[in-house]
Image 1 (cartoon, rainbow over the protein chains, first blue to last red):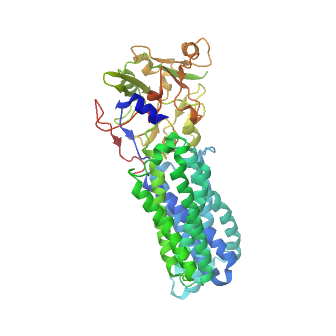
Image 2: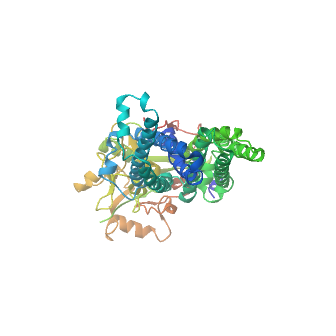
Image 3: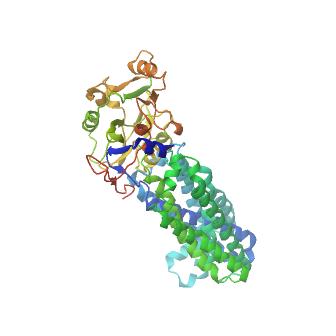
Amino acid sequence: MVEHTVAATNAIVTLDVPIPQVIWGWMITLNMWAKSIGTGVIFVGAYLLARYKDQVGESVKIWMPIISFIFLNIFLLFTLLDLHQPLRMWHIFAHPHWTSAITVGAWMATLFTAVIFVMTLIALRKIAIKYQDKLPRMCRKLIELKFLNDELYDKLLKVAVILAIPVTMYTATIMGEATARELWQTPAELIQMMLAALLTGSAVFLIIGGGWSYEVKRDLAIILGASAFLSFVIYMGEYYFGHMKAEEVAAIIAYVKEHGPYHIMFWAGQWIAFIIPMALVYFSLKSRSSSLLYLAGILAIVGLYITKHVWLIIPQLLPLS
Amino acid sequence: MKLGFLVDLNLCMGCKGCEVACKVENQVPLHSWRLRVKYVDVGVYPETKRTYTPLRCNHCEDAPCERICPVSALHYLENGIVNIDKERCIGCAGCMMACPYGAIYMDPETNTADKCTYCAHRIASEMMPACVVACPVEANIFGDLEDPTSHISKYIMAHQKDGGVKVRKPEKNTHPKHFYVGGGEVQLNPLAAKREEGYNLFNKITHLDHIGGH
């Protein structure tokens, strides 16, 4: 083992060049976080429409695409800004390299955003019809576009749910293709990405669905609690057992263990994103009270950013050569 | 033809001539290196030894950088070199995240990824890479791995019997075309040597600040 080698040889690097450390920083964290919300509201919104259409149908139909569209644009904006040559983004479409998960993801995300854009127009048309007397003439033109109707919306929703799956998961494949970062293993990251989407999707609806019935909120709370629990279990699996897989993983996990530079941030993320929301969901379900769930939703969304950021940064701290 | 590199670490004396030649030949900007020589000190005084390890792109047969590049800016040449088209690169840094050897850097002048190309432009003119020419002890050996009569092929055959020919991180399954003779754990495994502030003889080993995005 390496630690024995180091101890036995007392090998020390005495001359080297400065090493680039963090290559993908907070913009990529924001990218993943915003994408989780953008696809998560589609998954959870589609579930609410299937199960509680009579109760929350109209509200979900309007807000689901609007929220998704906003966060997908945040995701796309920061993806673009993180490029060192953002004006060359079109190369992905003109010279696609299909073995790259970045390429596949960019195409999927663009298609998905286009579908959500049309759904958003349908939602905005509904709002425009409701408030047509108060709207300026320009906005009223949207009402004249009669093909933007419920029938088209329902068809697009099916497409959106299917596309949301690869759009949610493709970042995990990019992480898997990042051969240099041993910590990120595609199977675990695929599940983490899906759980993050369900966590944030349910959290968003718990925040905006203040007037909804307890039954609806109970379902959302169960989705949030279960997603938080499973995510937490996977992180703990890596935290306590990851070092058994490979020396690189052991060295990376050391950054979040006690005395590691990211120890406090890692645990802050785990508590805010998973542990406290799980406890709030438990107490809420036990007391049949939904007031705690609003707080659980906010904490889950905030905490997920911290959790994702730590997991993105720590493998980049390890010298590769 | 499949071009490859071999460094005999028993011969290398850490003069950094290859590093400087590479910088000059390829006009590599400040704070960036296509090739560097890492010094690792081994042992406890008075039983100590200094080792020197030139580190450059491995031109892997299954290159993770080529696989992850979304626009094929990183691509194979017919002679096996993993080349880069800087005009096509979008600067996503995916290749930097994928390369297990930390061999790719973001050129601060062009804002595109760059790395050792085995001096592909010189090879096209039937010249040896600049680092090979500069090496005073012929520790850098370059040639066609598919030609059994080439110097590099003979060198590998002469040293492989006792397991003396190694590559960096073989467990990554990248099949590097850059070999080392006389290399041990401390030279080839970055986790086998400590990097501690205050233990550096010649300079303060630092980290460059965050380089992703703007």
